[in-house]
Image (cartoon, rainbow, N blue to C red):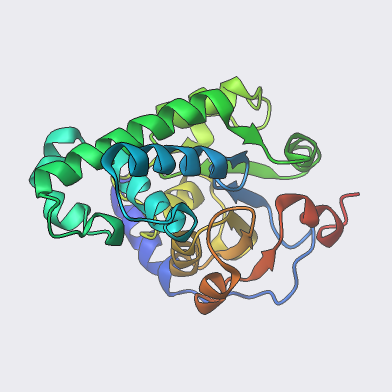
Length: 261
């Protein structure tokens, strides 16, 4: 059987499986898959600053705090979409509340979204920070478990961020997966399923740590226990609607839960 056909059949198997364990402890999993932004890297202030810049520059009637989640979703789509395709699919792609104003044309929407995205990339490069105790958590976990990353960034961008924060000892290049690994963004489970296949780990022996509703949906579709951290942008009620395995305030709360202290 070719690796491609095995992967397809594995996808069906994992998508339909049910979770076996009702407990989360250090011996109940072999693999931890991390999201990047909102879990390891704090980008909230970068998003807000980029949005404020866009609101001021284009005189938009919007409250930054109320539309940050919508902006985060839009940016994930923009970073996965070449500019020509963004223009071609602008009507559907840029269907977001703060841009749906009668006097804003499709072309203007593209201009605004592109500007906000470019500002966000600049601020992320300059100001993004690691969340507290992230490196300590990774250092302890890496001694005992396999570690991978799945992000809606491009793999090259994720590797650049990993290098910037000196996290290479924990995230090997071959186990860092961007959307370009499968051509699918979360909430599609393809990235998670590819990681399971590549690392030879069953779904019920893995956990996925994310911060967005799309992470929970992807994890559930892949049959992986998904832990949500509230350090990202999604609100607790929105996360709860998708039935994550566990919700914690921030990554460092897992020290006590997994008995790593």
